[in-house]
Length: 306
Image (cartoon, rainbow, N blue to C red):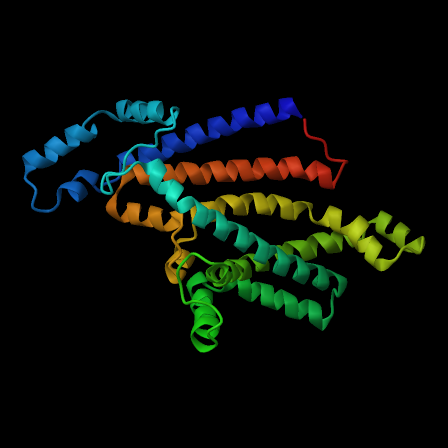
């Protein structure tokens, strides 16, 4: 196990190195000029050139990348061009909100998606199955802002059960988590139904039924642990997606996550923030997949990590 984790960590480091190089290169060749954003429209050519030299943006690509990488290995994400603050401080200030939204969204999509998928599999071919699959199709097809605005109108404006937007209490978390949960539940329910149907056809399930085991025990002890394995891999991916920030949902609900921070940085060509958020999101994806791979053997002992 230790050797496997060490090997995966080395692979993760190489992946993050590749992500940093590609992202930095794309920002380097970007037509937009961050110096113009800093200097303003009325700045003289001399002022623009002075700022470019101060930031080191007049250096060749490899020199700039090496300087950034040297700071990165020391935990220095750089300094925002426009906000004049350390990128690590800006991200750390937004990280709790993103982690909270990620946890709430994953909880909602698992509760909704797994419940729908299991019921659909157990009622395969019936009207219930068809209705749940239609609902899942609507969930994956509906735009995020439409679902968010609809939930806001019904539960915040009309019923007044939840605040319209903001951050700070559990009530603020419900609607944005439900929005992401509804969208994610569609994928989870379809995957869970397909996996559960396949497992229920296996010989060991028929053997368990022939032995007279209770239906609930067959479902919870034999079918569910095997059917849920693809879901664990999806959760690992979702961790990275949600950590990267769901910009539309954060905008609709005024949620101060790192997705909003990244969107503002993209509009202003604030390269250090863009790099910082990209690397944090990449780390979340890598760690999420690693955790999913480590959890899988505990659910199914037949799977070995090597």
